[in-house]
Image (cartoon, rainbow, N blue to C red):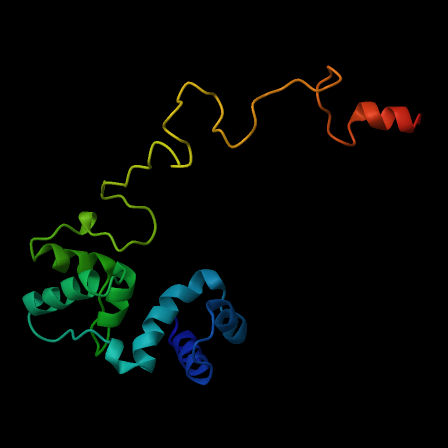
Length: 172
């Protein structure tokens, strides 16, 4: 990421708080595919309270990473961006390494976004929707529709506009 791109995004976001990513992308001329990491780096520049303190030893920084991941549900990329200030830069690999130094497994940490690779238990869907009664399980219908009855004229019911009807009306 070029420093001038970051400054463009910071100034645009300060002038247009709450702007969507698409609006920011259009406003600064940066494609959406490149905008995410630049925005993550711009957010702490705009609001200092988002910065995660990177001072102290690795154990202290690791505690802050665990808090950001588990209490605030931040993604690894955003944590790395929020830590990278004051001349220090952190990569996602650095953040995960520090997280694992606390005894936690970064592969089992799930923020609720994207696919859950942790193998976490999914809630099993109920067997039925709850609409069907329990009194007569042998019936094929749910009881909401009437039982199948033949038409009064002995023919199967037809929908309006079927080919047979259209053919009779329009010979072309």
